[in-house]
Length: 460
Image (tube, rainbow, N blue to C red):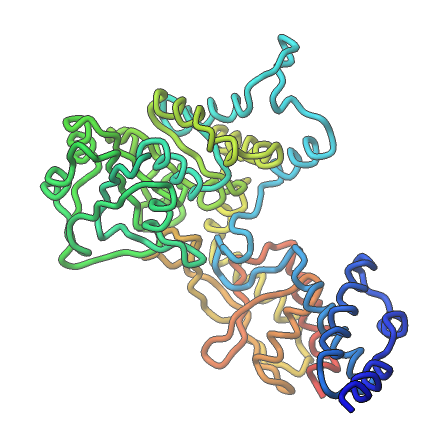
């Protein structure tokens, strides 16, 4: 009896070709669509009851749309978070885009010396330019800051030697990764010292012994502590490290190479040049945060240490490809030429509130007559990306209350736009923060809002 039921159910399941014909056109490779259809039909086959044909098509269509939405694509960031980790962090400068368009489609001298006609060394120009920018003897570049830390710890702390670190610096970074886990994954032992809120120079001095590989300081770039807190200055730790003959490494993370005060931010983010001047042996930071470039981990400091790191077998697994190096080279040049206004991340931080308000007024005037309550609001933008956690930037928002749908449905409709427009809900309104929306995107935002008001999927 069971076999008969199973045979009947199998007969009722439509053929792959029939479902494909009913789906219509999707801008995806046909083989991907066929794979989705087969997977969904396999799920139906495993059930005891076969749905109606239209229900099966709807299931397949929903799966295809989920897959399509997961493709890497541009989005309009109306969240007010300038360095948004979920949105790819720092947008690239036009010069970096031009570098990608020149290097990407052609052969390049990635590891070729055009003067001698022989094999060359990767990233020579970038490493020299970064050394000048950071006030360092030498630099090395890997694919992100976590990789930089892994490489450093792996080199100095093999065979389970100890890394001395304050308990107040055992931070967790994006995606749930913790500094402690990164250090242990690199093969080192953690030697935690001090308390969460207070770690003294004596704590460090007592901890350093024959099994100490290095002293590590991790900048609290994504949180801050106030009140009854204490930690020794970098210069004092550097002096201790020299006395004890162990390397002193500082993970800055944020990648600020210019004074953050120039953006009207009272909070100071230490720069690699400042830290190295204090006697730190090596510093590492991200290329795609306040530096404003592609994802990269930059290591700067003593030449003997950076040279040793580049001889590590692991370095080859962590090195950057030609596209990353091309974008990074263009970004470094902008910093050296002191043309940081051309770096989108830094430019967004410097936009005046008056300029934002003018843009908001224009956008709101173009949205009159729609079934929406629209107003110009005040926002508090954030730098984001684990940087400047105490600082907010005054900003301007477009505040919307849809009359014919919920706020959640309205937000979902804008996310379904092309490109997706992403804001946030607060104080009973849907908000779009203009600090993180480029002026050239204003027309797209207005068009997306207009289209959302005629969408039959939301407004019924």
